[in-house]
Length: 296
Image (cartoon, rainbow, N blue to C red):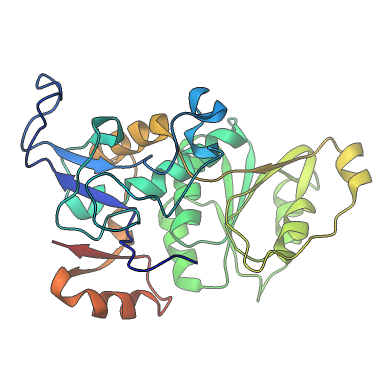
């Protein structure tokens, strides 16, 4: 819950229109194309000082940013005041594409947390935008990727991004597919990108000895999950969480999008001008799209 008025929007691309007197003019210039991020951490706690802004103790989605009239991340604004430490340059792509650096940065953090190795069998459960990014990054990391989703169109896109196997749980048993692909060994890594608690146990059951499951999504409702602690012990499993991203992740995301290493175009479902922002929200909440972009 947030207090209103609230300026939402945390997937942001912009153009620098003015530069403050204390800003290094050798680095930042009017006209620079930038993405904006890592502004919700405090910058001062233990985790921030250790370079783990994504795990800031004081992480706050309702901060009151400098120069803004109301609380919130600020993306739904024509103008923002930004500290250069929160800006990351991009080039070669449209602002709509660049804005998707934020979700990509979070998935970069997730996949690096998992530590994908060449030849690993990686299962991605859920093929929304976050699942699709996990698929792209896992494929580029040399993994054999199994993608699972109930939506056939999303599975088709997963195939285009290089998923080696796709599974619709309505039609096929995911565990059987994983065991067939791995000669009954199990997967080295499972990414659960869904908000459904019951899927966590299913994901754990897919793991090989020494396997890892990454719980990427927030869980609503946050229902407790039963699993066998003895199995986790005997199989030397790891249950990991990954949330948000840090400056290093943003640097990587903006560079990968700028150079076409990661394809974000399929995720721009619609673009609306700000005077149609209500229509944009009503379209987005239908749940049949990846990203609806508002342009100023």
